[in-house]
Image (tube, rainbow, N blue to C red; front, top):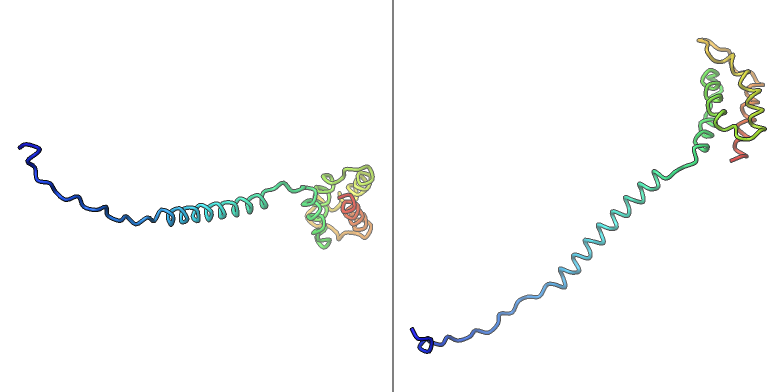
Length: 133
């Protein structure tokens, strides 16, 4: 068939295509902002939880929580955290006087209650550690 003999067909008008690209753009931006906000929130919580804290503060909290009614546990805690906190000369001197007095409350099954002098030395050391921090 000859191309000139082909019947001419009417050209149809263009069909209207709904343009929703602006809605898709705003929807995508909203989703990205929500995901970024949630991500920032969880990163902030993780950072607050894991940031480096001064371990001396934790040690001092342990000394503050000493129960003087349990002399054996108090003697061990005071020795452990006292050695870690004794940074200046004055606290080292107090600890050197205190540790031999604490020896009678360690290494035994039954121990006597803490006497007032030992309690006073322990409280003095804790107060001095508070002042130093």
